[in-house]
Image 1: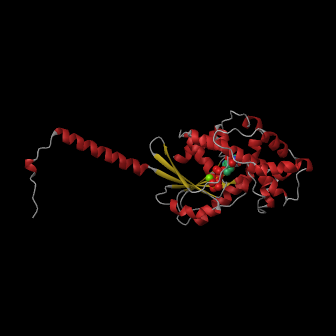
Image 2: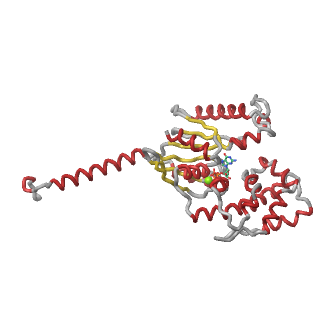
Length: 323
Ligand SMILES: Nc1nc2c(ncn2[C@@H]2O[C@H](COP(=O)(O)OP(=O)(O)OP(=O)(O)O)[C@@H](O)[C@H]2O)c(=O)[nH]1
Ligand SMILES: [Mg+2]
């Protein structure tokens, strides 16, 4: 038999009692905090705006971008300009369009452009090369048919401001950061401290090859924020969790419906051509129906129409979502 300790012989001092109470209290608090932590998983196809939502959350909840990150975004702006324009040029062949003969030598310059190194300003000769090629009427014609080839949608934003971007002292603004485009590879987790709880937001890549990684992210998920690009007249997928659906890129959608009739893609749409409001209602209903079908357990689905590049709007929408 082991030795038995008699409590009678052990003196517990007031100080020890106090320490014990304190330890118990902080344990309780830690447990409470953990139970209150929500884990939000961002899902959606490539380019739907998941990482943009994460960037906006960082701006809204003050998780600042490090100088290293800002430098990477600066380099990414140049990459988005050159690669973005080159993808338009590549798409021109299928569209049976050609760059004007006097501009054709510029194409190779774009193709050859190398990435920017740390601290290196954008090579100034590219300012006019990019400008001239962007203004080529056939390049513009191809870009306006961007939906045929999934062309980057941020080119209008960056190309309308080349002088600012090519200033040797250029630093990306918050809006520039939000407009940059880079496919997410792997999984990133970011913690936000909200008023009375923490939120862990998980961003994954939406490209086909990345989707098999999604399965690793579902553990302990409290909500899924699913993004669909309205401007892509895309399709949806719903999971068996409380789900929030963002019908995103509303700004581009409003512009696009002016010249691309929804009825051509969804024959049962019965709104007038150019009627963005009717279009939104149509897609909202379609997704709500889809969600209902996929949702045997009748969980709630909340649908919001968003423009993820608009910080002020995201502030309002995310405040509602965080409830
Ligand atoms: N105009 C406009 N652009 C948007 C909106 N949402 C996202 N974008 C842009 O769309 C591009 C792609 O957005 P991302 O957030 O990187 O897309 P993603 O879903 O993370 O894509 P993957 O990481 O490949 O899965 C970026 O250039 C964004 O600036 C929007 O509401 N309006
Ligand atoms: Mg992403």
